[in-house]
Length: 147
Image 1: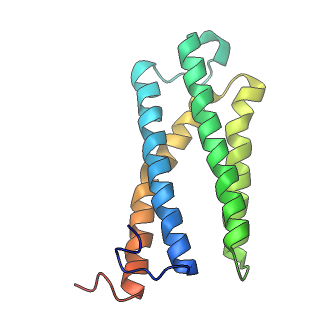
Image 2: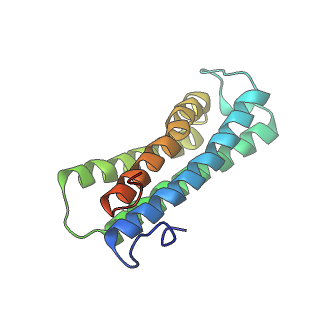
């Protein structure tokens, strides 16, 4: 798909654009799961995890694991694909470490899951828009999307 849009093979821009496509799929799946969790159960910011129905606890854990796993994968991908390091890269990497810790903490503490899930929903529902913008910006820089 990326090469079909005119991106040259094996370049950093193509790798980053491909990463944006992966992020869109990740965030779309996560947003759907988060919406279904909130659709089926009222938001209780102070509720301990053990008081929620078992199926909801398991679904919440799955969402946390999915998000944590993606943050770890993306952080490793950033470190492996990167050439020259900048201060914005440090901020981006710190974001991934903080979010991974943030999504692990409700499982360790046994509470706070509703607040973390709501923050995840707010972040993930905006992710596709940001990444589509990034893809279009890269398309424009290689001479595509000029119309």
